[in-house]
Structure formats: C-alpha cells, structure tokens
Figure 1 (cartoon, rainbow, N blue to C red):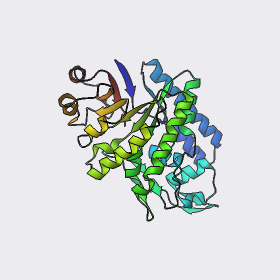
Figure 2: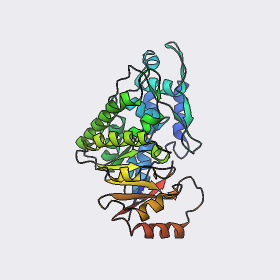
Figure 3: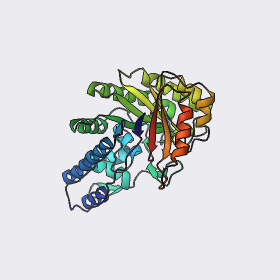
Figure 4: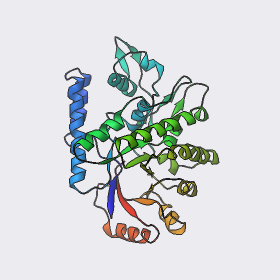
Length: 325
C-alpha cells in the first residue's frame, strides 16, 4: 500500500526559515541569502520523505507566509494598493502579509482569518473589480522542477479553486460569479503547464467542502471542476479534503473526473459511512487520511488497521495519508 502526505512542516528543524526571514526584514541578509535558506529547507524536506518511503511527496507546500497568500499571488489577485508601492515581487508579497511602512508608502497587511478548526490563520485574498485573474508567477513549477532536478518526483499542491473563491473577500461590486470563469481558466492553464513539465499528479486542496454547503455552493463546485478537469492533459488530479467529511457533496464529487479523492477519516465523522454504505468509484484511488497530524502522541495502529481493512472492501486502491495541516 502506498503512502502520501498533504504538507510537510516548512519552518526547518532549528526554525531556520523564521530566523532567515527576520534577518531579511532587518536588512541583515540579502533576498538571495534568504531564498537559498528556503531552497535548502525544501530539498531537505523532500529528501527526508523520499528516504522514508513516502510515495506521493508534495511540492509547493512550502510558503514564506501562507498558502492562501501564495495562491492569490499566483493568480494575480494583488490589490492595487500593494502594486502602487512598486516594490520587488518578493517585497510586495511581504507587504501583503505583514504590511509596509517606508519610503514607498504606508499600507496595512491583508486581513487574517482562522483556518477552519485550527489555531492557524490565513491571509484573506482580495478581489477588486479590476482584478484580472491569470497565472502571474511560477512558484509551483519552479519548486516541482527543483525537486525533480534532485531526483525526486513530486505531486504539486495548490489550494483548490472552490476553497480559494469561497474564502476570498470581494471589495467592489463584483462577486464570485463574476470571477468563477477566470479562476477556472487559470487552473486550466496551471494543469497545462504541469503537463508540459511532465508532472504525473496534481493535488487540489478543498477543505471548504467539509463545511455546510448550499445547493448554490455545490453547483459552483461542479461548474468549476467540470471545466478544470477537462484540461487535465494527462495529469492525474487528486481532490484532497480535510477537517471533516463531505456528506453534502459526496455524490457530486464522485461523479467528476478526478483520479483520486482524499477523505479525512480522523475528523470526518461521516467519511467511513460514506465510503462503506455508498459506492466509491472503482476508477478512482481513495487517499485515506487515517493518521492525525495534529496528535503529538503515537498513532493507534490497531484502530487504523481495522479502518483500512474495512475500507479495502469498498475501494480498488487505497493510499494512506498523514495529514499535517
């Protein structure tokens, strides 16, 4: 049975990313020196996972600040007040994350909100009426190639289109419906680029699916992914959920052209029931979140083995997941 991981701790064992970032903010090191520290952490993380037999190793799970912020920058959702500072791309990113007061101007950071049921907070993306959604930078592709050059094949991870839109803030007259097509087109371009680079898998994280969904929400999710999945170009797509179960949209999700579906069997109270009492698609891989990454104690292996044994009766293939979110 193969194994996967959703995301790997990115601060570094001795917290070297934290110290390097602080030194950069104090202008004690250059951007290049900080970026080199980040690269070393990423390569070490990939190597540790590879040496310990993880089959589906993530890339683009690394962030200097927050994955929602990374996705906003990737999709060109940078509010005009930050562009007006005319800083470097890196410093514009940090201005969005922590604010900026200096020669170029004075702006506050983006708002922060609690990331589902964790103690983590994410930066809330902002959509202005003038926002043009498109692929605007190359971080996911650079980090995929970086790992590949070290001999490690990864599955690039990105916040999914549905979760990104639902957690965003719309500051003008336009709303989700006005940006949905542009966002799905950008995700199509994202898959096309991964296909060009030779990626086997792409992971879209959609934790918003575990919330209470309206019929309108489900229609939006289906609309987005029917278009996105039409552009797979040979890339296998994993739809990954966590922090609960997907009782509101299980049937709709299973009916879409995903190659893998990731479900949470730790916090997802209905996940086991959904798989064992309803048909799980035979043409899809179940990525089963059975090891709690929030728990500092050892895993209850007997309980996990019983769960996996029963799930195997209803699925053609299972990949075991450690969730670290």
